Length: 303
Image 1: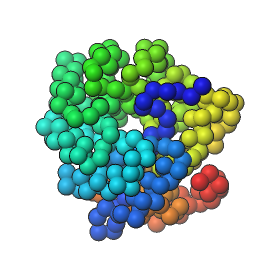
Image 2: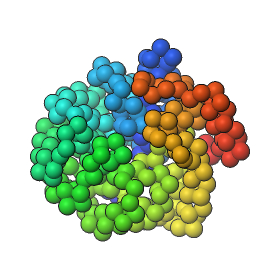
Image 3: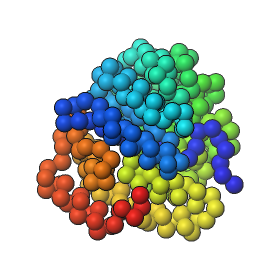
Image 4: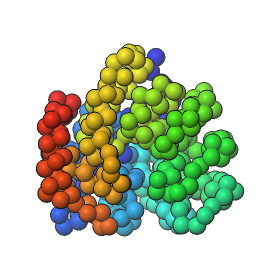
């Protein structure tokens, strides 16, 4: 039986498509969003993969408006509002809500060292002041903070906190989170660990947030369905996905992985390869290597 929690399925942490001049690329938005929707996936914009920390509020607002118009109510639209300044996050939430955002995603502020009390009060205050539901985001690779399971449990009791997107690389943590929350119909678990998508879904998570899904969303949707109907097929799909994910992730830090992902998408005609500073576009040699790997894996068959 398919999972029925409100926040579930394949949520694509979308790249933000830029022109060479650093403007938002309207045509690319339409190609990307339609690809995601056709694959029965949900767009999540202005997250880590979306280079949100490199964009002004004005650019973000323009992007949200463009994406919302393209989505046109067909799917839940998740929008990131993370910021080191609480008031900036609240303002972003109110602004993006008026532009069509359905749910907000925010990780912890990461400049100051924070204890459990700091984190609880921060997310509680944010949730109270947002005009829509909040998904808390655990991503220690960028925040250098791991949201403890005890903290997540306390926050899950808040009426406006509806789930957790967890990108921490720990199989044991996945198991414990599943034990604690899989039975909570009002709190969803979403995993951002692409190469463990099958494992997290089988463990009891409600959805996955795979960055590689920008290029092959249908393959992830098929995996999501298979985990609930055909475990053997799901395992085989994960074996197909992992070498594709390796193209932009293996042996790369995040600031290299995002430009590489955009090359993968550029090769498929989805968006241009341009990124915002401080990120840097892939070199010509890197682009050629990525294209060779895509050809070797025959990625076009999975579109």
